[in-house]
Image (cartoon, rainbow, N blue to C red):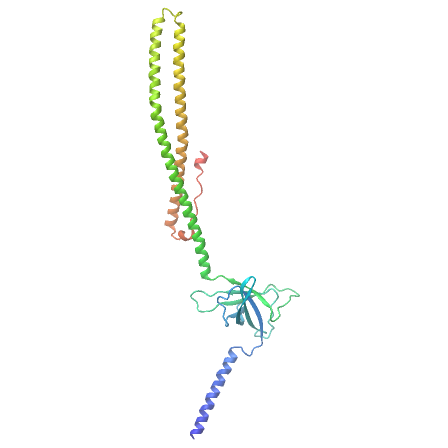
Length: 306
């Protein structure tokens, strides 16, 4: 009796194992008729021996092997694709020449592996099809991490460029202020040097006029004999007036030249203030401008029109 029971239990266990193995074989499509193709990839990141292969969303096979290839161009990878020979309805699965594979990297928070999606070109009459054993080229869609890295690199370049431009503006403003101080000091020294000479010229002119008045008073009864002395005195006064006019013209030109330099320095300071105000306003309104970058304001053409 016990032997019969042991035999029954053993037979039940063997039957259960057989059923389980059969289900595994059926669900794994191990009995399906398969055909092998190869896929060339620049990197094996995300590819495993169980990576699914689909045709526009329809799963038609899986990756069975991933092997490296070393040649003159460097290291590349060749993946073996095990695809069905027929679709579920029995239609032959044929891939036109020019079919490419797109490797989609998984999301960083996803536990799924990468997926391979086959993209076939537009079919026309007389299209040739790939044969088992042919190699398919592949492209890789950048993952979220790669895209974030590219964005971070671009933002870093823009921020560095903005900081460099700001530093250049600050240096230019510093040089302009220094030049303005130098011009003001030179103007003050020139005015300080010119003022005594102008006062001296005015004193000489006043003295000459007094002497002229005295001479005229003395020679009024005798204009004829003293005409030469009067002419010499008038010529001397004319030379003094000419020297004073030249000195005044020189001082006026110097002040006009300094005025242009000072106006240019004030214009640069105004432009620098405008750029910094624009940068502060953009960053205050949208703090993400630190990442996306701030465009420079349009140049002010008011001064140019003036």
